[in-house]
Length: 154
Image (tube, rainbow, N blue to C red; front, side):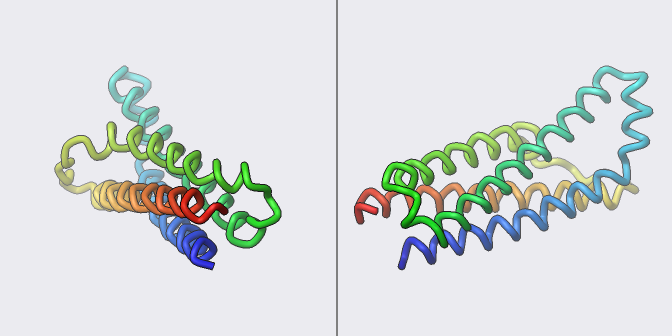
């Protein structure tokens, strides 16, 4: 029962993270056309655009995996077999760790200074910082379910 509650909490947190991610991507897309034009003339602008896209995609993929895995384990976990139930949690914790570190290297390494007259971009930065916190919390929740699986013998 406790394990099921934790998986439902993971699903809810992944859903919240998905909303943060969606909002950040929507705000970043407002600058997409300008960024693409700049990328034609600057290698650094092209690198920044690519990194922005790939880091946001990494967050989306990690959240989607976490959402699907947590829902499946919450409602179908008993029928999945001991090995799947035991390995799913550490696998998901590892995926979230990798996604979070990849995003943090670009978005959260040092606090970014808000840019003047770029309100939506600044909002996207804040939402991405919030997303990094969600990924970290999810990672620890998956770690907790992993420990519970081992201790309780699920």
